[in-house]
Structures are given as C-alpha cells and as structure tokens.
Image (cartoon, rainbow, N blue to C red; front, top):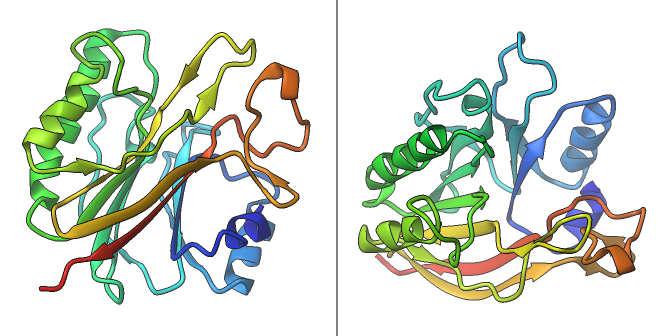
Length: 227
C-alpha cells in the first residue's frame, strides 16, 4: 500500500479509517523508506480497534492544537490536526463517524462548523471521509457544505463518486477536501486504480479481491497564492 500511494507522487497523504494492526510497523517503515514522515491520531486504550487518522508528508509534520471533543467514543480518534511548516499550510484530517442517532451527527457537524473559523485566516485544508454528499438531504446533508462555503471555504470539485456499497445500490461522494481562500485549486479527481494498484472496487460486477479499500482516493493538486 505504501508503494501504491507513493506512485501517485503525493506531498501529503491523509488516511482515514486507519486501524493499527499487525502490519502497522511494516507499513509505517515502508512510508519512512519512501521519504514520508507520519503522525497518527490517538485512540483510547480502552477502545479496541477504533478508527484513527494517519497523515504522512515528505516534509516534517508538527502536531496541531485542535482536538476533537468526546461527542462519542468514536470521535476523538477520527480527527488529527497537523501543521506542515515547510509547505506553509495546515491539515485537519478527519472522518465523520456514522451514528444512527441524528442528534450525535448534528453535534459532529456543529463542531466542524465551530472549528472551521479557527483555521479560516491561515492556509488550511479540511479533508477526509465526511460521510456526506453535497446532494444529501436533511439538516446534516449537503446544506453543511453550503454553510462552510458561506464561511469562506472552497470544496475541491472532484467529479464522479468515491464510495460504492457492496450491493452496488449506493454510489456517493463521501470524501472531500475543503480549502481556505489562500489556495489555487487545480486538478481534483477520485482514483480507483493506478497501474497495477487497485484502490477501490467500483461495483460488485467489477469486484477485485486485491482492492485496498471501499473508498477511492481523492487526489487534489493545489498551490498557495503568493502572500
């Protein structure tokens, strides 16, 4: 997986739903060998196999000061804030867990809405598996992206879909990258495979047991505007 990710020549990698397992040491060693420094969010030792966020970069990472509250046991370990000093920007990598309780889901999005202004005035990116589509209905659907846009954030306009359910009945754009106005956003796309690497299965009819995930990679090119 490390080699497959590196083949796309990324400067920064954000992985969500990352669960450190038996191959964690091997994977992170491979990242180091390929020139990436990495950091991982912290999960409570009392919550086994909780999803975490891992961020890797070609330049040193500094852990940020934004920490997710204990809205649910799943939330804090699904958020990681880092600074990338040599590149001049910050990254808030996150995954919005999928609770059945709509009140908890509202609290997740309220926290994102309250946190975004803290990053708005400096070059920052919020990205990851937001478990939300711009076309989704309801108070925690696409309207949440509109709220962030009103607050000065810009979503990278990737076309296509990033997630397919096992039965193929559901196709969604769940993975997003949001930027402050400090950036010029270039090419943005969802990638399911590259060369011999299969990142995600598109549909059951095209099922590939070698797929690394059930989500496509979101690859975004950008530049920071001159000061």
